[in-house]
Amino acid sequence: MRPADLGPPRRYTAMGVVAAILLALLAAVTGTAPARAAGTAGAGYWHTSGRQILDANGNSVRIAGINWFGFENDNHVVHGLWSRDYKNMLDQIAATGYNTLRIPYSDDIFKSGTMPSSIDFSSGKNADLQGLNSLQVLDKIVDYSGQIGLKVILDRHRPDSSGQSALWYTSSVPESTWIADLKSIASRYANNPTVVGIDLHNEPHDPACWGCGDTTVDWRLAAQRGGDAVLSANPNMLIFVEGVQTYNGDSTWWGGNLEGAGTYPVQLDVANRVVYSAHDYATSVSNQPWFSDPSFPGNMPGIWDKHWGYLFKNNIAPVWVGEFGTTLQSTTDQTWLKALVDYLRPTSQYGGDSFQWTFWCWNPDSGDTGGILKDDWQTVDTAKDGYLASVKAPGFGSGGGGGGTDTTAPSAPTGLVVSGTTASSVSLKWSASTDNVGVTGYDVYRGSTKVGSSTSTSYTDSGLSASTAYSYTVKAKDAAGNVSAASGVVTATTSASGGGGGNPGTGAVKVQYKNNDNNDSSPTDNQIKPGLRVVNTGNSAVDLSKVTIRYYFTGDGGASGFSTSCDYAAVGCSNVTQKVVALSSPKSGADHYVEIGFTSGAGT
Image 1 (cartoon, rainbow, N blue to C red):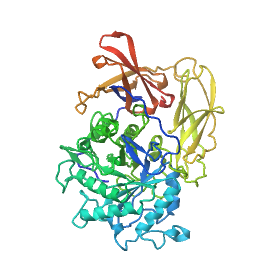
Image 2 (cartoon, rainbow, N blue to C red):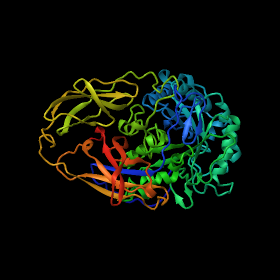
Image 3 (spheres, rainbow, N blue to C red):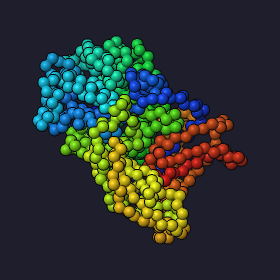
Image 4 (cartoon, one colour):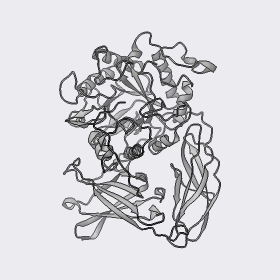
């Protein structure tokens, strides 16, 4: 994980808004998604088909995982075992809802006599790791991961433990060693489908190129040589290929530029094995120029589309965001992570398919990003983990990703209050619960009836009757299915009219528009990309579930089949509804409109 240096930092000031939406409206024929085979996803060996990764039974699988590093540096083993048992750590990873481990390593672990350091064996911890070398410890981690439903991707992170390299070889670790070690580790796990694939080299960057034809620096050609070496030893493995830093003068994060893969694809001896991989980070790693662009975060989907997202959206190949992370210390970083999670989320536009991902990282000792664990190596950072809750996916195999050991329920939510009312809704907020592993969400009850769920500490209950009293409680839940005791009860009475909970106020709104068909957009992509910002100009809360926006347009060349997607919304794209309506009598400049609404989860 290292950034490209793309320019000096610039200041960004956020605007206070009710909601911001970026929509892409496509004039396209939408096909029917193929039927999916029944059964537990993840069985056997995996392969690719277009943008999908499929298991041995043809089920689509979703990698929603975490990086756990350490084997790549001079500890020669994952970090944290100086204070915890490795099985306990893996159980917590699975119970927190991650289904895949990306494990970085260096070629040093293949050297004879390479032993792990900083493992605590006291009080029975890590007892079965005593006396094992680094590769044997890796075997144990892979074995237990498979038992609890976790898959593993091995990441050749560094040629040696001294540091990252721009190219896949160095003067001390030639390409021949890289090839031999790839074949060795592929053979080692040839009969173990827990290890689904190998990330050939971490973050190639300048002078690495893509498609330039110079075999000493062309990473695409090297990836073909390395991938074929892996497949010669284990033809069932997926081959994860990262991008470079610069393509045709356009620079981004190290390993994050896959613009050239459309023109110069990686072609291997075994078909349906390539998964392209990108890395993306926030200002805690490097303050890139796009973070201070006035259109941020609305500019981000276009940047991601250009660098790697197009491969997924055009059904060329699966795309795995192998690293993304942040300390979350700045508003910009928080906004970036929310936007990226929205971008990664499955949508109906792509048949429910989604990008694959592994967050950086589990370890709290990553200086640029911190981790999902706090510095005590025990406690989950629920705020950071909460950003990822909506894109997590089930575990694989009989373990189901649950680990089978977490039976501790979260604490009951406290501080439940009514934050607003209208004639038809009640808005609630509360203080976050705590959990030994991590809180994944909250269930809201009206009386004894569950009326909804939230991954944040607020919720709006809509569709209520005017001038009516309702009582509410909230319960917290974790990834293992444990549910807390109920919060204290609060009572709210809806208003007689559309006012704001006894405060007559007004709830006027205005809609601001921005044309997002910028220079990054192709004039022939058959898309219009309006950016819409809804601003509350009144003095009381507005229930977004009662807000509807219509954007009028004329179909190009008389087109009548359209699809829509939400690229970013401040309230989350899952809380935005969209439909295209044909006008029975076309108006001047318009024969259709897209109607945008909000679910109750959008709040106020």
